[in-house]
Length: 217
Picture 1 (cartoon, rainbow, N blue to C red):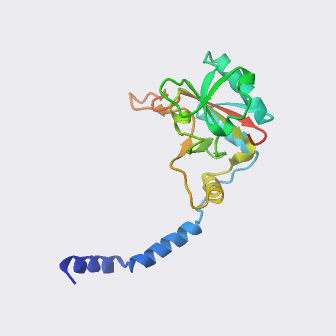
Picture 2: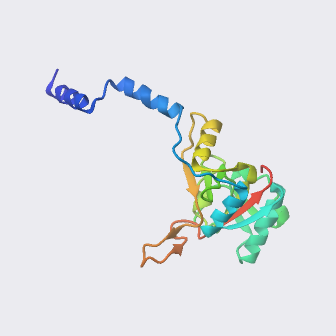
Picture 3: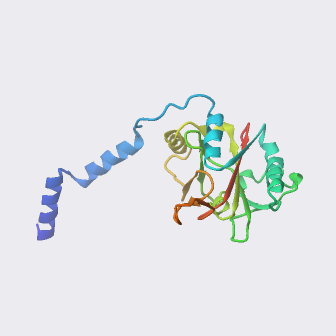
């Protein structure tokens, strides 16, 4: 045994740690059967709770009966706010009839010239009014992060109660294969760095509009 191994052996003994393979097995066992800590009880309608929390974070919320009504709702929002009726969109909501609502949609990653981004979401969290978005070939993260205005189509059936429920859904639907990025969006981007004054749009969209739909898009 050389001096390095002797020192490391003493450190391991002092920390009470055994062989690396045993520690790995214990870690994998914990990951395979995660334990939940204390959680708040989320009573009532999850969609109502999500809406209230999202609005408290400066998001705006509209609700439609079906995904087919989302393009018209998006067009109403953009027109009411004097925003262009052109947007970059993710592939998961591309099949909706955006041209029929008067919107010009480009399905691709966003660039700095894009003013509006429209996306779906993996799920939404009632406890905090947060969206969970997964990056992928059809869902580039730039669509929700780069344009000044982000519109998200949120199926009511995909609203879960807590963050733990969101992670459980992710593990169940994408076992063993996490995406490159998992983004949590809680209202417009904001900062209070300058004189503790809140400024929206500092590091991302300054407007977040959520369209809750009754069914899956």
